[in-house]
Length: 395
Image (cartoon, rainbow, N blue to C red; front, top):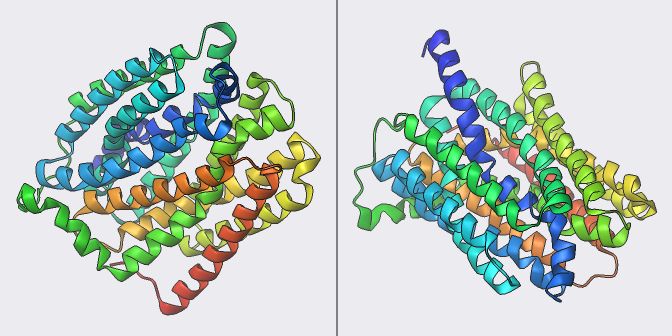
């Protein structure tokens, strides 16, 4: 691929790929400021209201397993159009919900449509780019999509201040329409479709599960994200109920954390040109450990005492995630859609476990979150050291 052709692909594809990848962040983070007030309005405990997040994550991850192999068989474009259309329809239903049960049910439907976006956008990245170029594109996308969790809760806070929470889902539906128009105008990126019959298309996961290096890398990288997903579920309760901030002020602290994610991705983009990508992964895992220690020691002293070590963890995830995603995908030669789907499915499934854990009726959620960060950080750092000694390499 010539440099001119590559730059042309970057200009055309990166904004759309970033938008598609940002669907989960918009779908979860915009509603975060409303969770404490919804718990009061519907007279439900936080563990129940947080099911609008947890059920979204579980359903999203489950449907990833279908979109990936189907896209390997029929191309990326048609499954994307179907999934985003369902997402738009479900977003409108969410806007009309009048109880926790209804909103949870419609969020499950919304997640089943949104699942087409992130996994297939990553597969499209593998279709178009390769090697170091793909790693650079993943970092670009990470920088752009970091804007979603930065602005999503702020937008949600403004909507709550001036209109009502129902409009949060109307805005998500509009975002879906923009994504749908972009996909319709984009040519098919998969040049060589799989010849596996539809009745056997799911068997590609069996082959992936036999790929020992791929499975180990997926598990290690997924566990490294557990502190971030736990923070997403517990952040509104920590800042609003724990520190007594308003919903709008909470959204700014959450945006600060998202800014750390973007800063990490930008640092990765710059540092990847001067250092080995594996060093960035190591540094990221060390940062998660240090952030967990700081949360346990000073996190209870005030919103900034908690926000700064949490931002350190998020920055560390931002700096390590693009090269780790690239390294995971390098362990497979075919079935990129299935590989991407299984990767993100594991991210979200383990993330839902962290969300459920932090949503329980704990007296001190900050201590629980710090414990999760420290435990996960130590585990993935040790596992990564062992993997490097055993020689984890490209496929």
